[in-house]
Image 1 (cartoon, rainbow, N blue to C red):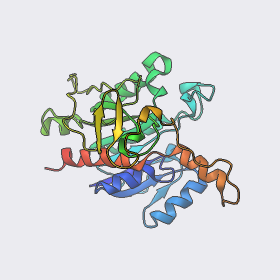
Image 2 (cartoon, rainbow, N blue to C red; image 1 turned 90 degrees about the horizontal axis):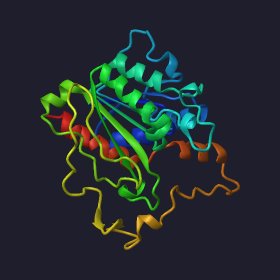
Image 3 (cartoon, rainbow, N blue to C red; image 1 turned 135 degrees about the horizontal axis):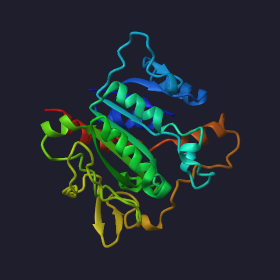
Image 4 (cartoon, rainbow, N blue to C red; image 1 turned 180 degrees about the vertical axis):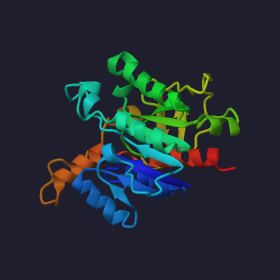
Length: 277
């Protein structure tokens, strides 16, 4: 299996999906510093800068099994003006255009949980509707970084959309990531939507992420034993006042925009189990 990475950043999604056994076929990233990081770690992978001109009409084969990416969050960020689709940095439309053009088996996206609430849910509903219009069944999950071993919450919404035909061939089971450390007070009751079928997703049995449930808090099974995730910070401390670090501001900016690779790996492995006969 092969995947393509939109808004690749420094490769958080790419690293996790590769760990699941899926090969990186191409990356799209416009930031020069992030592009240099990608070039260092994926020197043989083709890269394209501007998603608005991707895929190029150059006769190349850009088709992949999986497309992943995290569109810019500034249009919906609580720290910004929250202009949503009126913001020039709103690139969900371009992202969905690429998915519709290349028709991967699975599309995976990440964004802050504010996406679920923007414009009273209509923004996210429009994304789900656009995917359904081109034949994709969608489900979404709010997953904490603490669920994959990080000592901070950093809850993000992960959208998984897969071709409806693929779902029929694989039966009625979904990606089934519910229970992988949902962020509190967020919508995590994921529902497959599209393709003419709507049903509540059954919780995944067991917990493959090294956690056990104790009351209302997830407790670490290894390391930091007994530390409740409810006591952890929302975001990690990345040393914002450190001096003498080359390209410090670029590094901090790219870390802030990246995702936790271990979450992408969990999703990637679930995709492999569903797609591989």
